[in-house]
Image 1 (spheres, rainbow, N blue to C red):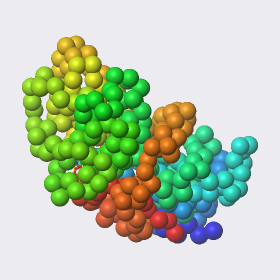
Image 2: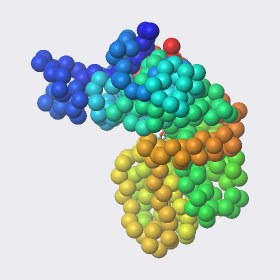
Image 3: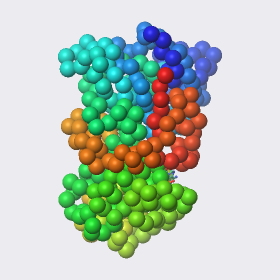
Image 4: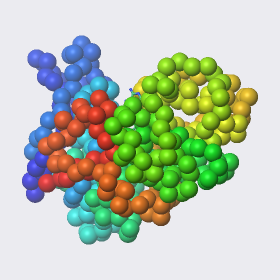
Length: 347
Ligand code: NDP
């Protein structure tokens, strides 16, 4: 079969480019510049993994933006097919448990880092990385959720497991509200009965965020600068997709015994905080990773999404785009110009 529309990374060639460097990190002597583009691959180009999947849909996440724009060396092997998510159907399997016709999805597991990813018509996947497509979702819906939405579910579950945040009592803050994680998080937490406050830099999105379930707003700028280590207590819990000063301020504003689920770094990867919220208010900072999360956690998150995500709201927060639009969308997501989730149609 022809592998039309496979995006993969190549190091920009600098005269004597040698193959060994393709597997290394960016070589600063060569300018370290990475380039992304659409190429046609053949099946022989694919890695030799357990299961061949015909991909119908992928998605766009912040990390895809980083990988394609090359701002952070996400791909640790080159060349690399990008795309951290995929949904499709098994066409060939060399392992028990998976057979032709099975509908599957993959989130993370090193796709676009060490494993070839979802921006390709076909991909060869390690069996351990496959999740069975939940019966309640079409492949397009599963990618509308994608890594960002499944991470929002992991965060919501982490906050609920903390056990001290009661729906209907107090307020739960979601930062990076108009983004992929944020929009799915608002829809989920509002449906679970929490009073959700959205922190966003875009006033133009207030109406949209209200339609997802947000009950109030905080301006992004009000959280973005250095603040005192302990501030007036406001949030029963929070879901932070932003990091840096924003996360430090959110910790400083969370009530005694509350919890903050941290998953992102849209403002920055630093955390200029102190131990004060932890040792004086008994807060929990709950770290959330989607990439290497064990299968049982993934299954729980997808079940949670199936039970609590309103499909109409999912459709409302989703934009569908062809593979050819990925480079321009990658730039837009890094500039904070995209809204909600993006399904990428393959083929
Ligand atoms: P999006 O770009 O869709 O959303 C991020 C949102 O953050 C933007 O929409 C914007 O929201 C806000 N934002 C953007 N730039 C800034 C800034 N400089 N300062 C403060 N806020 C900003 O990305 P995703 O939702 O896909 O991902 C969100 C974060 O979560 C990313 O950092 C991503 O890497 C991380 N992530 C981590 C995962 C994990 O496993 N831990 C998995 C998935 C995502 P608004 O306009 O409303 O202010």
